Image 1: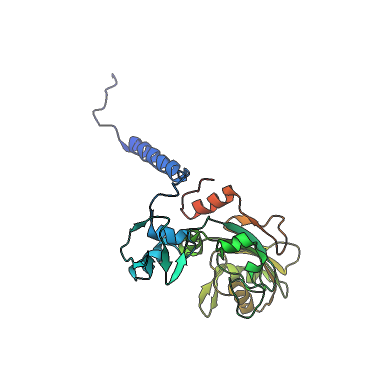
Image 2 (image 1 turned 30 degrees about the horizontal axis):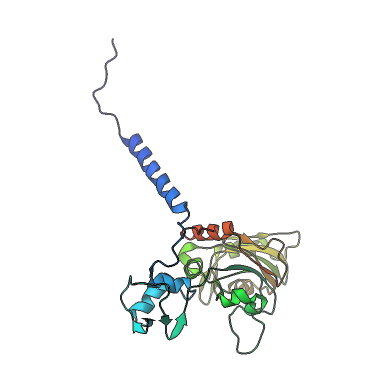
Length: 284
């Protein structure tokens, strides 16, 4: 019997799938492409101006504007989306601000150093370890490390980046090396991964494993950042933490950086960070 052609229309599923994939690829390329170099004299949105001064994120800046806490040229501005000239005088809660060149600093925080920009008890703070330019540009720590916790600390005046890195929805991973007071039992590693009930809720590690032949040394990865969280998790299992060192944050590593030393991030590191929280890369 001769073959007969089917009158059944061909499915468009394959064509539609290909079209959707191409659209997604174009969008991905557009998102990943660097922003054109901005005109430094062009008008800029007020919330962006505030964020680029390192004060806060654009979203929080909008809240300050709506609350009447921002003045431009001495006049209160409450309309969202307002554009200003870069030369305009801007005050936020009575403080005059100005745009600063973005600065990104990676510090290997030593012990007995406070993660803050000021301390009324005259203790050593992380800002004491930086140079004049970084301090003048208004870099601030992204999150914090306890006084006795050492290791990787990021500081920047990029307000949008700071806000997003600290926001739980982006689930930024931090990797720590922990030295406990006694050998950590295998079932306690399971408990760290499954979760431990603390006074402020369940806390668990994304990963927990031995990192050497010494069972007192454990590697811990987590994306939360509650106060003294790791120390409290180990204390709940009956261990004291003798040493806590952060060795990785959002894909950044210390490399050969010694305690108390710091360096500025390289352009590719900055843009990798920004892409990780859905911010467009910068042009260098």
